[in-house]
Amino acid sequence: MAHFAELDPNNVVLRVIVVGNDDCKDSDGNESEAVGVAFCQSLFGSDTNWVQTSYNNNIRYRYAGIGFTYDQSNDVFLFPKPYPSWNLNTDTWDWEAPVPMPEDAGYDNPEAPSYVVSYDWNEEKLSWDNRREIKWEPFILPELETGGE
Image 1 (cartoon, rainbow, N blue to C red):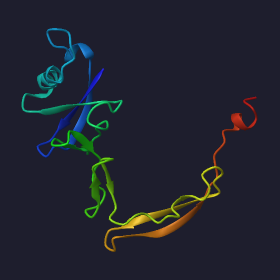
Image 2: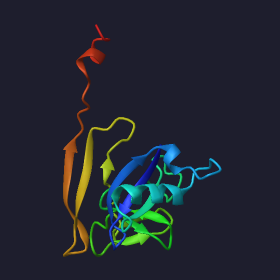
Image 3: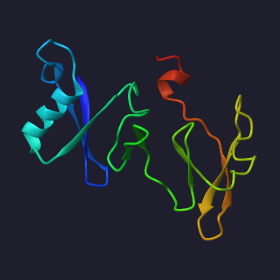
Image 4: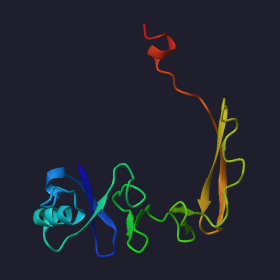
């Protein structure tokens, strides 16, 4: 199966659909994005704009989702920008805050956590605030706790 993302005029993903492999094959039997796009346009209108995406992240860096933006010049799908001050890291294609998150964020001990430290981004102050310590209590399914009996 192939996946195609419909884009609005600003290259924002409106929806992602699944297209059968046979509907993406050219006359030689090879998969073709252009044939898949033409198939999508035959269903939704010739004025619609489609780009293939990969569920396995094989093309365009990541699988497209509603609200993502297709960056045509870099041929990647980008997550929605979370805050105006955040910058795009072109190595990871992720948005990053202008100030790194405090070093104590995350689990106190990744091997055997007892609490998690989290922060919220404050766009007005351009800083991390609202530090919280959340007690780590892993949920164990009763059938796993008793050995499934």
